[in-house]
Amino acid sequence: MEGEVIGAGPYRATKLWNETIKLFRGGMPLRRHWASFRYYDGTFTGSEAVDFLHELLRSNYNFGPEVTRYQTVQLLRKFFKAHVIEDIKGRHGTEHFDDNGHLYRFPTMSPLKSLPTRPSWRDCSDLPRLIRWDDYEELPQKENVAPQKSAELTSDLWNKRHSVAIGDVHECKLIRRREVTSKQVDHIWKSMTITHLQRVLGLKTLDGILNPVHVNGAHIVHNVFIVNKTGVVVLEKKAEDMPYWVISAMKCLANWPDGNDAKQPLYPGFERDVLRTVADYYQRLTEPLLTFRLYEVFVNILSLLQEQDKATEALQVSCLLLPPPNRRRLQLLLRLMARVCHNPRLPPLNDTIATRTLMVQMFSHCVLGSPDDMDLDELLATKLVTFMMEHHNAIFQVNTKLRCQVEEHLSHLKRAQIKYAGSDTDFSASPAFCKQIKKVDCEEQKVIGTQIPLQQLLEGLIADEELPVKDKRKRLKQFQKSYPEVYQNRFPTEESRAAVIPEKTPRLKPHLMFFNLKKPLQPFQRSWSFRA
Image 1: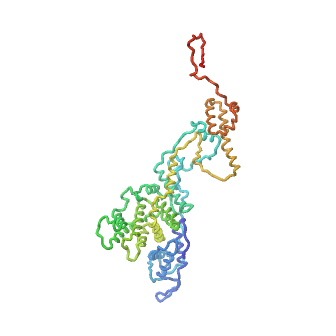
Image 2: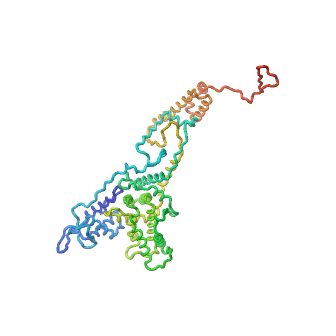
Image 3: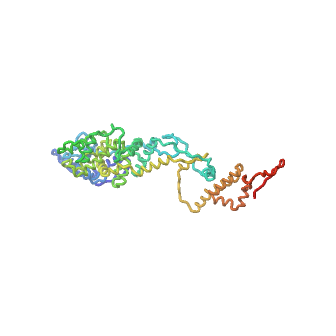
């Protein structure tokens, strides 16, 4: 009876609908019933259908024990409208299903939904791509860009990259990327948030779950940074905010009995009227707070609720995708629901239903809803809203991992970099591939990859006839300091060095010389005298 646990994936809501119908049709007891002096085989009453399906849903992990009998009746009405069941006269859709002794049966045709076919978004130009360090043009970049040159470390390029060690500073220049614009910051947040969500859901692709076109990077940035000291989003346009009387009613109920700011006279049932005021506002919204476009995202998160930390992280990221007015309304509503459920001083808000159950039933369809009438959104909303109400404080905190990743990426874009003249290869952006090799091969690569280019560099410096002797000695001295082993191998003795590089010629220092002016100079002769 428990059925299959539907994991995360595309069109999860449709799969749950089909799975529920299969379980209902496969397990519902059928027998002979009498009506109007006739008997009908293979039928069931409306009340029998409600009893069986209610127990089925409560014992199924995908829905849970929070499902009420009223919600079960609502689902059977959807089944009746979708021709999952029909009355004994073959009627369906236009008639009304009731929890009574009226007779129903299953039709012979299959009532299952077919999975919708949507174009893949993987090749869509709107798919966000992270901005790299070497992106100097405004996004989006043009298509058919020439492929990047392979990063082959030739000796000439190696010399240029290591020329600083021997004094060739003029061969390179220090450059910096242009200032990152607010539009690019929005794009980075969008790209990294979608990637993080896909990783948390454990999916290879978000096709059929989330269309990146519907994600607004500016909304994410607003939800992260424009908040008050309690973490609630602050709206820049007051017209987008809730009316003052709704906020006042929510404060009154959340802080009961100390939240009556207006000092209105209290009367029996006053708290119920305040709750009805809040409920009327939320129930009249034209779209659920989690929006129709994000419906599949949050339905997929339901498969993670057994792992509390993982589900909380997924909700943290997903709620950043909401428009700021929706996020604000949702956060204030969940905080109100949690406070009402945990306030022992608040009188009962219903004579027959517990406060916790009442709050979930009253507001769940305001939070999560499907654009398709034939869906299980009411049952799924109950489970999701219950979890969000219990963990709302953690859910509306910005995910630490995501924030650190974005900040590190932005910091990387603003760093300076050294570029060498004549080198078009940017090794900072080149992909790196690693594989394990033998120790002998490693030592051989050390020699080939390091010693040989250095030896070539040293020989080229020695053989450079255009370089003045003074500059040559200076650079050789710098080379000796930077790479002493290579230098020692080339010049093991002073004799070997002298054979290649001529020694300095001794020269008298000017301050040690003076003219002997006591004796007259002979024509065309000079006299030099040296101090002892």
